[in-house]
Image (cartoon, rainbow, N blue to C red; front, top):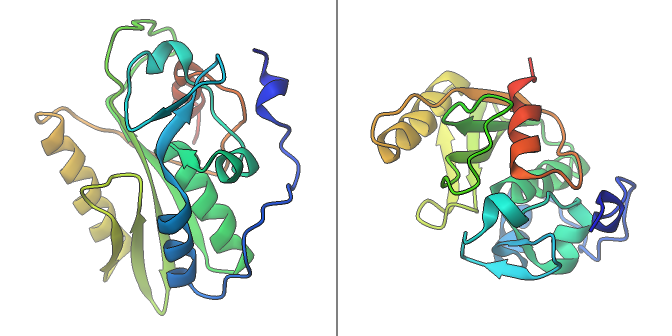
Length: 188
């Protein structure tokens, strides 16, 4: 299946009701999106990672809504777009064990988590949905404390392995896991 089959990056008809607050955004996502991904073969994979590195392709926000599934990558892109719609400043981040651009071990587990921070009333908030063990909205006094807490969680989960964290602004549609990793490697 080619990248075009995964959808163009144009503004879609989303069928999302009008949302007014960050709580509305979180509740809508929690009721409508579950952890999963669409394979290159068109098969939906719900809460399982078998063949992820071989089959995964990033989806557009409209596909995420239509399929009602998304990995952390798609769910963060969805949160980002919905928060932008209600004019809440936010930033997407990717925390992962570094893999070089040419890393091609398709049997390796994925070691990446994307998350979103948003900023209101002089505070920083972490909206977490794809990590089912950490679902919720968390408040922090500063962005630095939020980043440290989130990254430390994943470093501990990964047995102490360093987890560089990179901000990014968009999720290109139709990328493999390796292509997305390379994309993150080249964000400033």
